[in-house]
Each structure stands twice: as structure tokens, then as C-alpha cells.
Length: 424
Image (cartoon, rainbow, N blue to C red):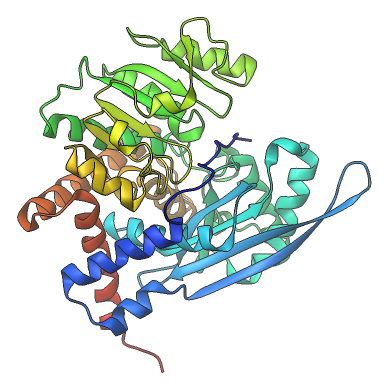
């Protein structure tokens, strides 16, 4: 399972406050009515479930899980499931809302959803994590399905988690339902290219953003905060683009090298030790220094709220590409904009995962699988097209990339609401 990075002890606003503020800004720009705003601000459905767990020592612990379906006007709900000690309902609400905009922005036929269990997976055995996953799945099973709501991996979960979820759901239905989740292992209907899809998408738009601000990616410098599923792949793909990755952090610490880290060697070190700490090819630094490193590009790829009012003024990068969901707070956005830092918003930058999740869902429904090259080509084409569309909208309307992306997405969801009508 993927380790999680600690969020700041306190931030100026909650992630739900940030998500709602972004929606309110977009509604204002688009001139939508208060009624439309009220409808888009609230989740369509949400559930909180109790998860009794029998531990390996025979004791019983009760965990709390959630599933929120923010909107499904454009198609079934889509969104990850995270296992994290700080999961709460407001966080899941915010993440589900962002998923709605992300799916609309990339023009995939989904609405937004999200789920989570309040648990630190590092403190549980594999057998215990399986029991947590299966009980959680059985509790939310009436709400999910290949045409209803399709979970995927997120912080603290992985393809094995998805295999357990798919199996649990399928046992309840009496037959195998491959399309109920995405991000599965290849052997049970997963897609080629899914594992690195979010990272590949982040790098595709980050490279375009560097070019946009006049920086040649070949020889540019970067720092990556978080070395899990997204950050690790982002560092690897950045290195392949000729970008020198100077600093990387994880939950345990950070390393830096002024000439660039050997990402391949760092990955081998992490595989052997479980952390970037102690990597002989770099110098130990404080984790917070990664976000303020003297580089061209920062990829915050861990959790929400890591760039906030307290540290935004110290960010020296020219571009911030949000690999995580909500890593830059609303207050920090204002500081970064004033300092000339271009922020590529999460609903665009990290949308590669949902794009390839859509590809996986399509393949499962057709029982026909594509090659990795086909998946990668289609992913990059969609990401760059979305980047160009958002950039053009932002330029034409003199908006930030985040507000432009949110406006485009909100308008598409609103149009779906409008044409479907209000029932009853």
C-alpha cells in the first residue's frame, strides 16, 4: 500500500471551503443563477458506513467509511477510494466535487464521486486490509456498479484493493463484473498503461506549461513532493523528458542533488528500503524545502493543502503542476498569481488517471483490450487537447488556468442539467 504524507496541522481554509469557493467563482464568471449554484454545490448522494474489523489478534475495531456521489448528470459517478487516517466526510465531499469538474473538463461521460476509509494502512496487515476493503465494499455495494458509480485507487489503495472490491461486488451479483471498478490488475480486466496514467498526464501538461512560460523542458529543473503512485511516476517521466529532478520527498524525509537525482537509482532504493531517506545519490533535506526549492517546476503529488498562505510566498518555481488533489489552497493561489507563478490546476493536471479509467471501463464493457502504446497515445492526445482548450479559454477571458478550467467544467455540467430538466 502507498504511504501517505502528512497534511499541514492547520490551514486557512478546509478543502471543502476551497472547492466551494472555486465553484462560486466560476458561477459568478458564467453568470449562473443562485438556484444553479445551490444545486451544483451539494452532493446528490452520500453515505457514511460502519466497518467492524476483526484484527489478526482477535480484537475488534470499528472504522468509519464514506462514499459521496456529487453529480451524475453526465454519466455514472467516478472517483477513487482512499485509505487515510485523516479521511472525513467534508474531505470526501470536496474530492467528489473536483471529480465532477475533472470528468467534465476532459469530456469523459462520468459524474464525480469519491470514497474513503479513515484508517492508516501502514498499521494493518495485508489480511486486515483485505477484510476492511471487502466489508467497506459490501456496505456501499447498493450504490456502486458499472453504470452507477465506479471506484478506483487513490491515496493508500492500489490495484490489489480494486481486485478485492471487484471480487466482493461480483460475489454479491453472482457473476464477474469487471467494470465495477477501474485500476485493477491486468489479470482481472485492468488496462495497459493504467498504473502510470496520472503521472504521465501530469508530465504531459507540465511540459506544455514550461514551454508556455518560455522554459525548454530539456534541461529544466523540477522538485516532486510525494513519491507514491503519482509522484514516483512523475519523476520518472520528467527525467525521460530531459527535466532534471533536483529534489524528492516522501512521508519520511527528502533528498536533494544540485545536478539532478538519478531517478532510476532512487526508485531502486525505495523498492529496497521503502523510503527515499538514506538514498546515497542525494543529500538529506527537510521535507518542506522541496516545495520551496530553486527549480523551474514543482509537482506536489501527495495530499491537499501543502502549499498554503504560510509558505506560498517562498515558492520559487515558475510552474506548479498539481499532481495531488487540492495541494494549493485558495489563499496560496492568490499569492502565487501575484508572484507570477503559473499553477496548472488539479482538475486538468492529474486527470490522466480518470481518462485511462474511462478507457479501462470501455475495454471491460467491450471485452476488448488495447495495447499500452494505444492507451498512452490516446491519453497524451486528450491531455494536450484539454491543456490547449483551457489555455485558450483563460487567455480569451483573462482568467487564471484554475478558474478557466473550472468555468469550462461547470458550464458543461450545467448544460447537462439544463437539457435533462429537473425531476419531478
